[in-house]
Amino acid sequence: MNRRELARSLTAAESIDAPARAFEPWRVLGVTGSPGVGKSCLVDRIVSRWLERGERVAILAIDPSSPISGGALLGDRMRMASVDSGEDVFFRSIATRNVPGGLPSRLNRMVDLLIHEGWTRVIIETVGSGQSEIRIVSVADRLLLVEGPARGDVIQAEKAGILELADLIVVNKSDLAGAERVADDLRLSLNFSDGEPAPVVLCSAETGSGIDEMVVAIDNLPNARGPAIARARERLLATHQEYLLSHPLFADALKGLSEGRLSIEEALNILQRG
Ligand SMILES: Nc1nc2c(ncn2[C@@H]2O[C@H](COP(=O)(O)OP(=O)(O)OP(=O)(O)O)[C@@H](O)[C@H]2O)c(=O)[nH]1
Ligand SMILES: [Mg+2]
Image (cartoon, rainbow, N blue to C red; front, side, top):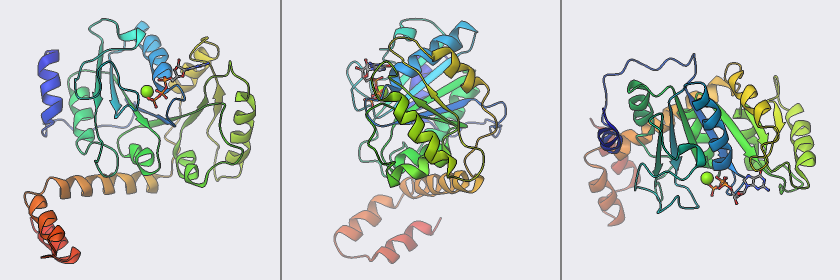
């Protein structure tokens, strides 16, 4: 499949005849964190290292808040330094505004397709905001949470869920004041959670400091830390949502609801029939 065909297939992302994806060795890295913490710059660094050792890397940027040279849906747009050229990198940004759950419903199939087509690593960058941040564990084999030095004093309650699921926490922008303190705070709060706490590493995508250590930490991530039940929950919810959204009567059910002809229960009943 050439790039054009691949791009087209990703858009359709129909079911492919791929065997169920094995989780070991892992292939799919989710990268999440608040807007502007430096996710894309870090991804760029990671991709460079992986390319050097011969990986073929596909990057899916979910609904980037800072448009990537022209914005989402153009596909195949390359901004990052590591992806100037080269057959071994594929980049795609995906708009999901107004998609409930915050992830494109076909993301799992897109990933299966990329792996089927020989991409050895897939990175999914998604902006962290509540539920969509957590939903990423329905697709990613490993999850990297990026923080910055400007974090508030209190670990926000909504962050607790994602902290529990992250396999590695990277405090980026270590060249700026405050990063060490954020890392200490994170380590402290992780110590209160059950089980082995996720490692917290400091680095700067800007200066390159700490990047080697971060890549080593990623490469050596043990089994996914997040509770299996939480991962399973997100997979089930994501699949159920996709099922509802792709139901041929979904639009009818919505219309009936909005016009007051159907109750929620009646609408659900319609959608639960095959
Ligand atoms: N000082 C400093 N600035 C950085 C570092 N990493 C990234 N930045 C800057 O932070 C800004 C945001 O970087 P991005 O990589 O686009 O951040 P992002 O998290 O991908 O942002 P969104 O995708 O919009 O959520 C850019 O201006 C970067 O130059 C760093 O290590 N140190
Ligand atoms: Mg970004």
